[in-house]
Amino acid sequence: MLRKIIAVLAGIISGFLTIELIENLFQHYTPIQAEIITKNTQFPEAQEWIDAFPLDRYLYILIAYLTGSFIAGFITTLLSPQKSLAFLTGFVLLIGGFINVMLLPHPIWFILVSLSIYLPLAYLGGTLGMKLFRKS
Image (cartoon, rainbow, N blue to C red; front, side):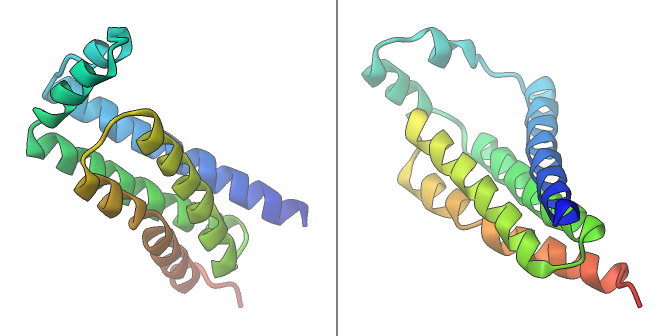
């Protein structure tokens, strides 16, 4: 039981860290002024700024979500070989993504795509982890 808990926690942490690392790398190479959102207390102005966000920025963020979810499921099944735990890890990442889209304004298409990424990719990472490192 303890092994399962550690596996899920390690998967969640590795997933969030991967997402954050990739987003920071993209921010480093294509900088934006993220402080506009954090300093702006008037929601309509923040919404206008988000609406003017370039499409490639959203794609970078989706790549981060894809990779982070996949790695989270993979790490989870490495530590405890059960695909259902990878699904649980993806579910926790989905909750984090849901909180993110509720706190910051996002386009509808981005909300739908990003929230549909976590579970399948975590499960896919878990499936690959099971196939590569299956214990006999």
